[in-house]
Image (cartoon, one colour):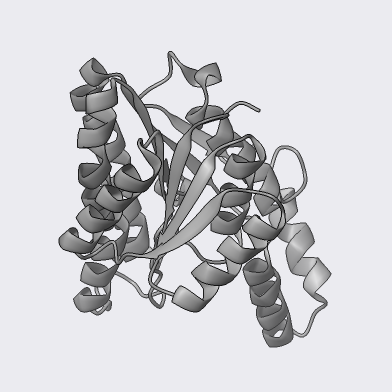
Length: 258
């Protein structure tokens, strides 16, 4: 129970990784508040967590809306008395396109959610963390900032800005006991990835296992991690096991970036 008595916010809640992160934090004793814009999904996950014996609730909050972020943080602090961890998960992925051909409104939309959304939520919770003398902010990034691929410039650039934000906030907030770090997953063997493999397999006329094996072969460990495995790194960064760690970027990718 690494997080007994702690309060954590998981912003941008949805399926897959964000759900696993929420459960991972709760399984180690944290009270978990889910925020997002898909109320049906958020409320369903909160109900699942409550049914499993965890202290969880859902609040509607659009990360692109400064006031909604501030209201959510205020409510969490008023109801639970503290905010120990923020996990910035919210993301947006627009269609792949070469930079010279891309619709720049797509780039702006991704930057608004991925980068400014993380800025908004971090600014909303930081005063409460500063007041209590400690806190943890964890950014969910991607190895796409390390292994850049063609036609993903908008997404990779927004995540690159998020990587810089991680280091900036670590420098600025460290004096208040606030640690800011990031994890950079790659392939996550979730339902979304399985669906993507199935679609691409149909286009190529091969079995989806072929695409799975090709992706796994790019990693040092030879397999694709599942969401629950990725969430363990977030729990580590939210706990006192990572007390001397800040401003760091963890490639949680089965060694693909190696």
